[in-house]
Image 1 (cartoon, rainbow, N blue to C red):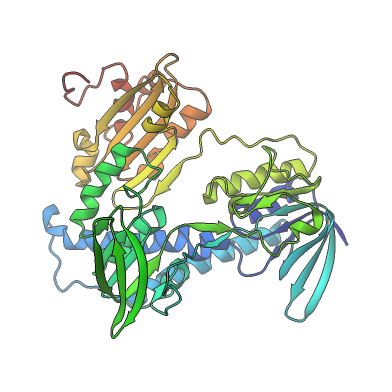
Image 2 (image 1 turned 180 degrees about the horizontal axis):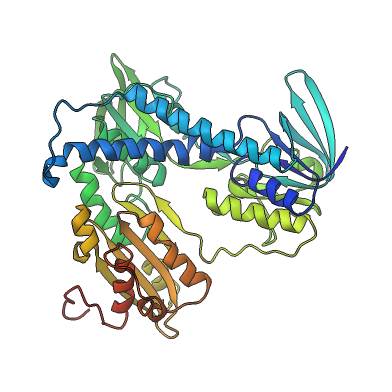
Length: 466
C-alpha cells in the first residue's frame, strides 16, 4: 500500500504532523518504536510538570500558616506521587491514540529505516515489512546525552528517564548540568527532601537565559536549599559504600562530594543514526538533520522535524514544525518562523522567555530600550504570596517594536504569550501598554513593564538614571 505521508516517530512533532496530513486528505502511516507521545509525554514535559505540581502543593501545605490556615500531621507518599504521574501520562497517551484512530491514521509499532526516498523498512518483533510513501517525515526525537566521565556507567549514575521511574526520594543527589532539565529536576527533588547540588561548568546556570533573570532566579532556588557550583567540572565518579563519590574541579582546587545518586542532565542528542540517511544521501551531522525553512531535507519528499533537526528543541516547536512539514508534504507552501519561539523553565518561580536577550542585542549592536517591572509591585502577586520575579521587555530603540520578553515569576509560562504574539506580529510596547489588562491579574506586570519603555510605569518607583 502506498501512503501520501509516512511519519517516523509519534512524539509531539510526529503525531501532530500525521494528524495535519490526514486533515488535508492524505492517507497517512505513523510508525512509533515505543509509545505515542514521545519523550515529552512519557519521559519529559508532562511527567515532570505533574511531579512539580505535587512538589508545589507540598510546599504550599508547609507554608499554609502564612495564609491563616492550619494543617497537622501532613506528609507525602512519593510512590503515590509517582503513580499519579503515571496515570496522567496514560490518560494523555490514550487521548493521542484516540486522535490517531479518529483521523484514520494507520499506526505501526516498530523501528523504521529508509530504503530510498519513497520506501522504508519497519522491523518488528515478528519480522519486518516495507512501506511506500510519496513523502516521509522524520520525527525521531533525541536521547539523553552521556558525558565522557570516568564512572558514568555506575548504577547510581542515572539519566532523566531513570529518575522518573524512581519510587523513593534519594537522600542526596548531584545534578550534572545547570540547564533547564537539570534545574527543574533539582527543584522537584529538593522540595521532597533530597539534598541537591547542581554542578555547572559554565559561569552561570541557565546559560541561554537573560542575565537579569538568571541573577534573580538563583535567589529563590538557594532559599529552597539547592546548592549550585558553577565554573565547576566533574572529573570522575567512583562507587562508595552508600552511593558514589564525585570528584570536582573548579579551577582553584579539587573537591569530593559523597551522594546517593548522580543525575546527568547535560542536554540531549538528536537521533540520526540508524535511519538510513546515508542510503538516501540526506545531509546530517551529530547535531541533527539539515533542513530548510519548509522543513525539507536536501532529498525531495523527505522532511525532518523536532529534536532530530537539533534546532529549537522544545515540544511546541516540534509541533509547529510538524504542521509545516505536513502541509508542504500535501502540496502546500508553508514556512517555519522561529522569530517568536517561547521557552519555559518550570522552576518555582517559573522562567519564560521569547525573542532576543539583552546580551545578544548588545553583541549584535542593536540599539534597544529596556524596561523591568517587579512582581512585588503587582496586587495579584502580593495576594498570592508570589512576589519573586519580574517582567523584562526589550524593544528596538528605533521602531519601538518588541524584540524580547523575559519573565521570572508565577505563571510565567502563561504570561509569555503576550511577548510571543507581540514579536510575531510586529507590535510595539505601546500596543501592549495601551491594551487594557484585567485587574487584579498577573498580566498587569506585562502591561506595566510595557509602559516602562517610555518611563510611564504607574505602580513602581523608578530609580534615577533608569
